[in-house]
Amino acid sequence: MANRQLGNSTGLEILANIMRHCDAKTNRHILGGLQKDLPQVVLELRRHILLFDDLAYADSRGLQRLLKTIRIRDLAISLQGAPTAVLKNIAANMSQRALNDLKEEITRLGRARESEVDAARDRILAVVAELMNSKELFLSRPSDDLAY
Image (cartoon, rainbow, N blue to C red):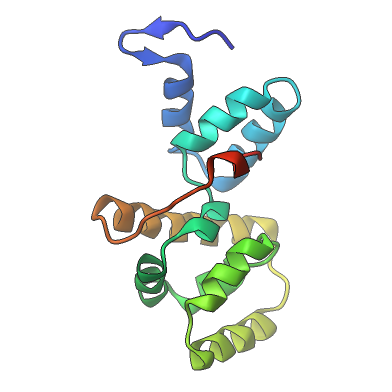
């Protein structure tokens, strides 16, 4: 992918902006498709877009604020198939009671369809973006851990 200028934006910035408006499934498809042939582009895109996996790098205070804001049902569904680092960070920022409630909700709901998981993640990421914009949640992604 050439790094041509289009006005003041590069093609990469334009693609990242488009991806910010896409659902989780579309973003996974785009990044997965680019990974083999253009891994550096994937690294750069990851610096510009927000994915559910980024919750592994959320600060404690911000993550606790997020957990108070979102529905437990959305959280339970969104965690299906989530990376271990995301699960650990969320669990570390929940009270034992809240964690037990979450486990019960996961058991009660059972396995969700991929579209339901993506929709729940999209709703959560919308709240994450709001919290980040209001400086109530911060992500500190290690630069060497951006591979998709």
